[in-house]
Length: 262
Ligand code: BO1
Ligand code: ZN
Image 1 (cartoon, protein in one colour):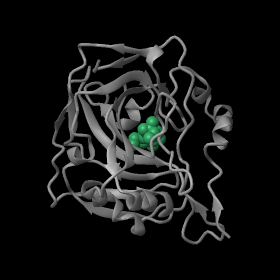
Image 2 (cartoon, rainbow, N blue to C red):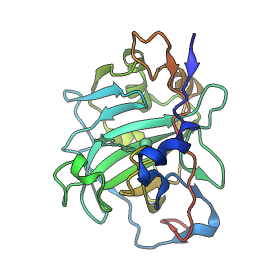
Image 3 (cartoon, rainbow, N blue to C red):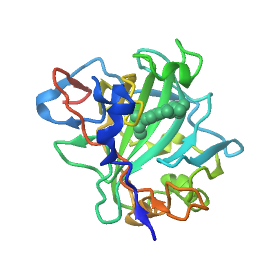
């Protein structure tokens, strides 16, 4: 008997009871639509330092019961944000095999198939991600929207390991590669706004950069993401499929999203 995940998106209505910030201000994700967008000529392309990781180094990939997460290296960081931000981890959000609309951010009301988040912390002001997580200027997350297209050999460097992390708390080593390969070719066009973690505790601590141009993965790769993993441990008698792990878009009153493109 296989149940589908109940934690999200239906369960998210209950988040504020236990996690007050989830009912608070500056919440993410949001919908990008023309009324709230404002061009900002000061938004430069980001610079990625140390992203080209040698295959002799390794990342740890883990099923944490909510998503599949890969720890990055403290030698990876971003320049051209208000502070220097050091990489912490990346993870994905997705839908299910019948409805491949699992992105968190939407554009003019439209979902993309899935979304990759690369989480960084402000290493100029804070010693580690835990200290930074609840500070207004603590985190910077890069978001990459995913849509169906040709087979993507770079994403496969992560996806090929899914069968080794099917169940909660399983982990596997992934040979190092250039994380820049996961980003779109155009790094100069993006949405920028101040928001929050999209999961509890929903701290309003994230400077979001959502790239305008989606990255393509194949239908087979998307299906693997949508079907490979469970929220439950391997010995759990009631397996829960890990699907629909995206949060609904949040209200965006009195705020603006800055865009680097016309
Ligand atoms: S997200 O990028 O907004 N979806 C997001 C949501 C939650 C977290 C990070 C990013 N949570 C925290 C964990 C911490 C962890 C930290 C950095 O991410 O709650 O335990 O240390 O990896
Ligand atoms: Zn995320």
